Amino acid sequence: MFNLVATSYEFLEAFGFAYSMEPVLKKLYDPNSKEYRNALKRHSIFFNTEPQVGALINGITVGLEEQHALGNEDINGDFINSLKVGLMGPIAGIGDSMIPGMLIPILLSIGMGLGQGGNILGPIFYIVAYDAIAFFGSRYLYYKGYELGAASVDLFVGDTAKKVTQAITVLGTIVTGGVAASYVKIELPIKIQMSHASIDVQKILDGIFPSLLPLLVVFVSWYFMAKRHVSPIKLILAYFVIAFIGYGIAYGIMAL
Image 1 (spheres, rainbow, N blue to C red):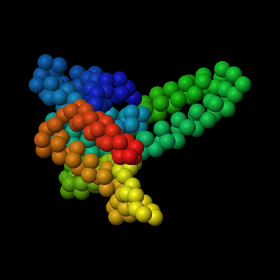
Image 2: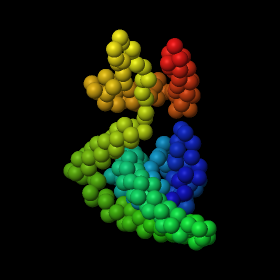
Image 3: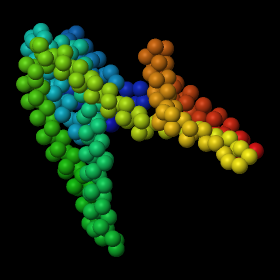
């Protein structure tokens, strides 16, 4: 629930997730042991999902860590981390649709209705209702996730392991692609003036391949981060400079 308290552009919610796991890891492993340090490192890599619904992943991870600490050889660190990373995309898609997309607008509409005319119950209702739903909902999902994590060993280990892992990975990739198509916005504000009409370059591109430029940017970003090991911060700064220069060029062209 509090994964966002220690965010960074490079790791996002990773350190908040690792901090939430620390009390459990101290009970499962000796704090001075190599297993404890490896577990903290394992949960400090990039992680990003919707925090409230994402509590389900915390619970599942705790259940799997418990099985690993008890000596289950089929549950290793790589398996735990792969499962966690594979779930964060689908859970984010569900959580973002439920919380920011549905719950918050409903609560805000009720609060604004109550607050018309200066009624103080409007903001109080929203604050209390949202915090209560977030707290108790996250708590419920956490413990359900723990039960699923402890019981999911038979599901994720054995003959069906590869199929389940592949399905989760594919679903996560689909969600990631949908998010990229929705939030990466790049357009070419170039119109070629003809004698009796003008040609909109962006409309031509959309007619051939909708969202082609955002797709190219996603692949370029992946290439530089995965193959060239460029940090996300440097990539963000580079895109900022490119956008600034591109805006200046486009503004100059339109001013002519």
